[in-house]
Image (cartoon, rainbow, N blue to C red; front, side, top):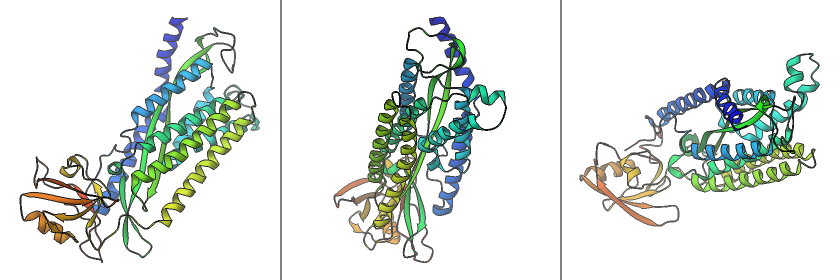
Length: 395
């Protein structure tokens, strides 16, 4: 028995390399990063973040979520058909072709897949593939996946900090350019599931929970793709991330409760899928509505200059300068424009910044002007040289 499990485990990992989604994930992250860098250079004149930055910081949550899914699915004997895995993979590829990470929420990828899988068996096509792969769909298992993926998404959103979001320029209500931030990440959750046919046989009465095509099973490693993209202009990115994560977490818990209930009342699984889709749309709508009601957080100000972005591993990053801080003084000199800022910096090789955060609390950071091998501070501000071009300039 143990030997059979190890054999199927090795085969399951090998089969993962036959899944086109695995290769599309690498292409997707690369293309999305290139498009973002192109926009950064268009708006700011230089690259802010590396090409794979949307992927950074997601691996721990992805691996932990995959482990939880694997333990529960294998322990309960939850079986998925190859057709289910195929539909999930193809739909994820289709929804991500536009490079819009907002479409990669499990609410859409798994939710739409559930309805497709329910409709496929009634398609008037006499094909053996449809009969074997799509004749029996484990909707309860998919709803459980949906719930865990939403909880994982909430955890990824919760981990977002002000300095690792992606800034951009848009036209504000009065026609002037304002800074916005994208809470944007993409993550991979690898997990093992049981699929029909293999060397694994049932070993306890209730296992597996759902049987398909006989009583032998194999393991399959599935790379599942999740993503999100929220635009924020009316508050600091970290505060918006905290609000959104709470809503997504609540939605995930509700779907999880319905997933458990669907074991005893099957039709609850359909309710859970609908709740996942409608609930996510409601979260998106509430966020956009609330953000639009607030005044722009990143715009040109009469006093001080607002920090829109901090370059990773730059002197400003090492000094703890945060997105959303306002620079009000440089070495004791008041700064209200980029010219003031440049002049104060160039007076001495040693500088001292007075920063004011969103709560009005002041703090000071100081360093040599050209610390280490980085010849720039590494900040992007909302101070413009003139009102006509309104170009973002780095120092």
